[in-house]
Image 1 (cartoon, one colour):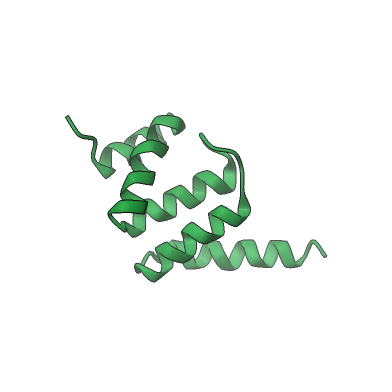
Image 2 (cartoon, rainbow, N blue to C red):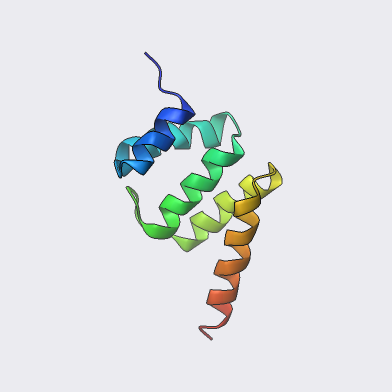
Length: 87
């Protein structure tokens, strides 16, 4: 039985990040799902089930924003502001 994006969201909320990442990455990369792209970005930002990477988070959020995911635009502006304030 194939897993759905909804299964990925459920696993994320259950904090089963490694399993969630596999499902959500597939939807984000191969199905161009903006919501999944946003969640993959969150996982990279926070190191949930993957190695933490702000660069990868920003790349996924940019894709999600292009696909109409509004939270991704906010996340991008927030991370850019926090990075700018570090220097």
